[in-house]
Each structure stands twice: as structure tokens, then as C-alpha cells.
Amino acid sequence: MVDNKVSNFLIPNVNKVPGNKKVDLRDRLGVKENKDEFKNLLQNEIDDVQAQHGIKISLHAAKRLKERNLDLDTNEFFKLRGAMEKLRTKGGKDSLVITDKAAYIVDVPGNKVVTAIDKGSIQENVFTKIDSTVVV
Image 1 (spheres, rainbow, N blue to C red):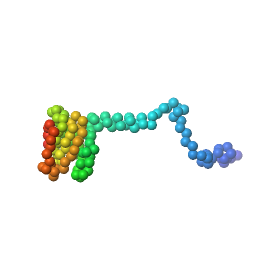
Image 2 (image 1 turned 90 degrees about the horizontal axis):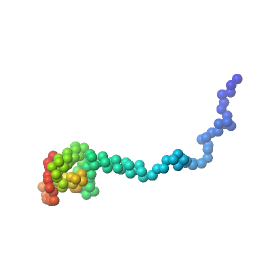
Image 3 (image 1 turned 135 degrees about the vertical axis):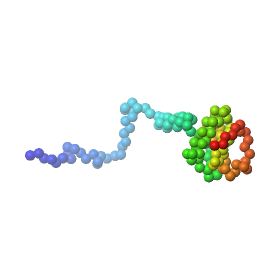
Image 4 (image 1 turned 30 degrees about the horizontal axis):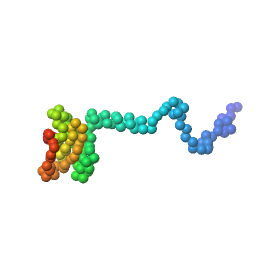
């Protein structure tokens, strides 16, 4: 006759092991890792993608977008990106981009929006130090 009982004497209950010690095996496995290494790699990847496909927003522009309740949605983003590509091919550097929602002063070589003006305030503003304008 086979006894199906499991004895706690032979297999201890590991749920009742005292302590809350965490063991870091990275040193034993030969893994030497900088805590900021992943963060730096990720930031580099984000910067690379942004440089190729994205548009940077300056702090000043972000503040103006918020103050003027301007939403830089997907449609507006693609209009800006397309306008900046056109300006780049034509040699634009500091340019004015006018969309149906707003006007943006952009730094084309830096791929950056410098400031934003809502559509209602465009007529009241004077735009200086720009070398080109595109309406999209």
C-alpha cells in the first residue's frame, strides 16, 4: 500500500521562510550594468527617431501652445513636418509656417518649433527675422 501523504518533515513549507532578503545575482553572473545605461540608450534612440521623423518643441513654443489653447494634433504635426521638409529643400532656416489653425515660427536646421500664434492673433503680429514663409 502506497501512502500519498506528503510530509512537511521531508519537504519544508517555503512560505514560512523568515526574512525579506533580496539577492542580486548580477555580480555572480558577470553582468556589470550601469543603472543609467538603459535610460541613456533609450534617450539616444528617441533623439535619433525625433531627428529623422519628429519635430522638437521649444519650451517657449510649448508655453505658447498651452496659453493659446492650441492643440498640436496628428494632422497639424504632419502639416508642420511636411512644411519643414519643403523649407529644408528650398534652403529655409528661420521660417514662418501658416496652417488653418495657427502660425509657427520654426528653426528648420534644428527641426524645432520656436513659437506658435493662434489664427486669430496672426494679423496683430509682426514677424521679423524670418527668411521664408510657407502656407499649408
